[in-house]
Amino acid sequence: MTLSELQELERTSVVPSYARSPVQFVRGEGAWLWDDEGNEYLDFLCGISVTNLGHCHPRVVAAIRDQAGQLMHVSNLFYTEPAMRLAERLSRSSLHGKVYFCNSGAEASEAAIKLVRKARPGGDVVVVYGAFHGRTYGALSATPQEAKQAPFAPLVPGFRAVDPTPQAIAGAVDARTAAVLLEPIQGESGVNVLSTEALQAAREACDEHGAALVFDEVQCGMGRTGTLWAYEQTGITPDVITIAKALGGGLPIGALVTGERLADVFAPGDHGSTFAGGPVVAAAALAALEVTDDPELLARVCELGERLHAGLERLPHVRSVRGRGLMLACEVDVHAPDLARRALLEQRLIVNATSPTTVRLLPPLIVGESEIDTALQRLSAALAAAGDGG
Ligand code: PLP
Image (cartoon, rainbow, N blue to C red):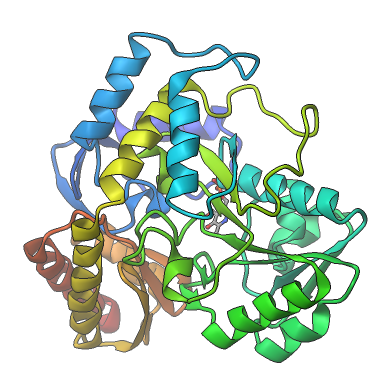
């Protein structure tokens, strides 16, 4: 079908909850996507940090094909090998506790909120401004952004939002606090790296008052910042991490991983999901995790991140660059949504605007030097055009 036929179907049949760009993609490989007319695009967004291994990574594709031909679903009333092996691998690679599977980032947030509330009944959850934890009610209530929350009031009670400063976080935690929930690097609000002091203050306050420290690694995890988990670079170990996005190598899966202390809080019947940890997504995630948890690949992420960071700093109209590894954003003095649109439609480079002045770049971790240089050339041309307004 042509793009205009799809747009007509969308107009008549799809709830208008997304503002889509006028492009129909039909194929992807590595860092590249092709539209229905055969045009080639360089993907520096990765479906918002999902296709971290590039499109259709051969090991992920093979794992999906094998598993889909063997067994696709049995529910969580029975055992399957991919889910148990993935849980062991995830736990071993992070907090050495236990894993709860779900289907998305928002569901991972929900699971974390329920877990910490069960550990401290009636307790508050402290969150910080600029956070994004998802769109379901618990996750939305933990996302202190007026525009996202206001139309859906009343929200779930028991959340307390503070600035992401050491003083504000320390001051918000007391004996009634169930948890502090943070993204070590805030993705949706424009790649804002929380200070080590703020994370340290959260850790100390949680230790002092017996609360849980939960890091949302849905966007910054799975190798994105140059270590498998972003917390590894902070020197601070949380009690729980939430994961999703890139975990499934392109398929939908989320997970919560606990440390030892909270490993047995949930009992049978407390929480669950029909599809969670199904054999196909678990096999895909196991392959994605094995490919990602590779010191050479992670070291490349740091190197390539530095190359991209330095290249961005040299571009016209770029005021500053921030982020870690291949999770970067720049402040620009042109209209960022216009820049992202020009990059897509005129330069065939996919990036996105997170504010009127912020452009976010989330290239695949398998990107090459020449692709980084091509992206910089294309972005430079889009910046020049946006600057001219032509
Ligand atoms: N947490 C973070 C840090 C995210 O960036 C997102 C999505 O962007 C979510 C949670 C929600 O994930 P999902 O869209 O899979 O529900």
